[in-house]
Amino acid sequence: MFGSRSGWLVPVTLTILGLGTNLQPVKAESTNNYQFSIDYSTLVNFNFNYRPDLEIVRATITGESTTPALYGLDSFTSNTYGQLQPSDNPSIIKYQFNSDPGVFGLPEEPKLFDIYYGNGNNKLFGRASDRAEINTVEGTIRGGGTITIYDGEGIFKNATGTITFTQEDRLDPTGSSRGLATLNFNLQTPQEVPEPTTATTLIGIGAVAAGLRIRKR
Image (cartoon, rainbow, N blue to C red; front, side):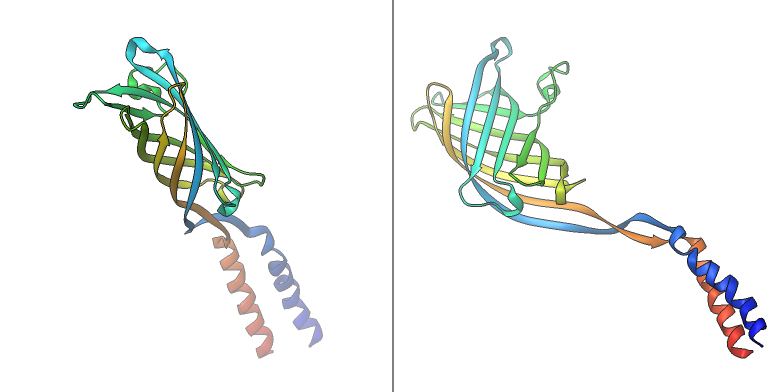
């Protein structure tokens, strides 16, 4: 009687041990979603000498969160290109900005990007598309737009999504202007979970069948 049961227990044990080798990590359809807002104190620097022949400037915007930011995103640096746009008001100077120089007919120039970071491991990478108006009478710069997120690090690894923002700065004739920006984050990251393969399912069925046979004996 014992010998008969042992004959069934051996393959059952082997099949159970084989379960671990048939588990493969796959991307589940579910995602982690993040929605939050952060206010940043900003510093804007324009390089008006970049391509004056095409009325294209380079802009670098840096930001520091006004309070400790969620997920450690206390700082950001944004590099972008901007081109002068037509304006009906002589006191309003309009610019269109984009991280992709191809938008302004400069495909040979490098694509720029934004980085959102802090002292921790979490980072976000994106590219901006926005507009700004310089009011020479009021002495202000007002703008807004969208940053398209294409990757990240830490909990934001493989992140996608968007950041929408509005920003207002006090115009400084030297080319550096300080202000405040509100950024609204809407992000998704894939959630990976282990999922059994077809082989694992078949092994499980075999183990159950073997168990039932033993019980009958």
